[in-house]
Image 1 (cartoon, helix red, strand yellow):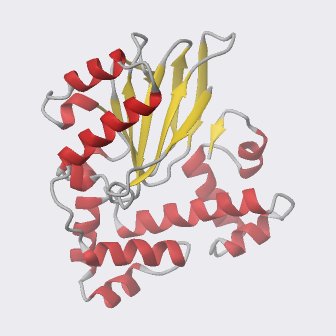
Image 2 (tube, rainbow, N blue to C red):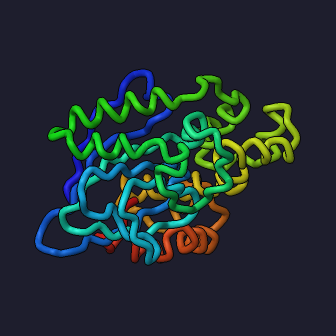
Length: 260
């Protein structure tokens, strides 16, 4: 798998986490990876005649949106396929779609269905462009044209920031108290703009914090990782790891087909 990253326009930086081009090359006919959940929504825009991916036994011939919020996704890319991947910050895809995010939780959706089938012209245009730089500019202009509003839900944004700062160790009750919302109101807003409940989101943040610690401190013990990541004990940490990855921590670290 060959991956090339590209710069994000300043207007999109509050919403978009990364932009890259992915091409399946090499000797094998297929390249399979397991992508771990990160509470993000990601677009995969196909610019080749080869199907963009096989996900969950289903072949996606065209561009897709992957709502990889709380479960891992097994992805197969065929040799010769190429796509542009746009990853949104948590909660930041909603202003472009204006569709309740919980409707697509842990799902893969045809890209054209999100904008009522009006985007086939974009895919055709990308296929006719020879270079990544121009493709990137075209797609970013398209996203800006789809941005419905630049108004953020400030209370949810506060909670997202607090969750990141505390690595998911803050309680839902504390978030509700600090935002002046009831837990029910807060949950409704999270489901609308993020697709997860506050509790689910905090759990995913804690898991992703543990992945960062694994990367930063490869020699550290599981007990120490669990403690740094805000888990009550190692058993709880390992159980969460299996939920989010399908594997034990040791299996994830040893695998070369799992993308953290």
